[in-house]
Image (cartoon, rainbow, N blue to C red; front, side, top):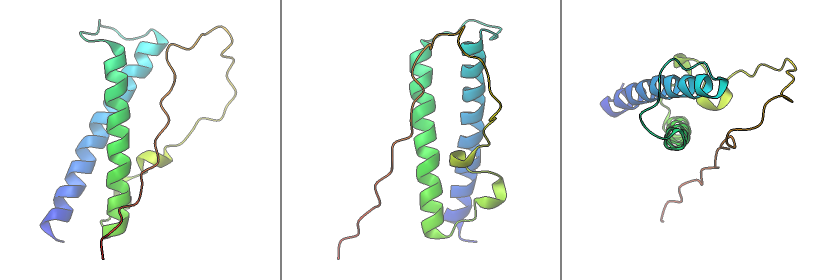
Length: 111
């Protein structure tokens, strides 16, 4: 495998691991179960998580185009399993809107 593809796989794995840890921290914060006080505003961490998610998605699209095998690394960030069991959320009010992923425009090559 070409060296740049190996670097891309490693970058994707590291970013996905960091994203998952930050996501878990935000879940615990929202649930009120975080066992320490944040040093920076939670909105900044939410923006960071959104940017990381966008970058993961960009890497997945690029990998698909360039034939880089990310599928061996588990589920993609865009295909995380969802727990569909019903939950009564009426006692909770939203802390902040959940960011929605922005579509990535395909790169147009000049001819």
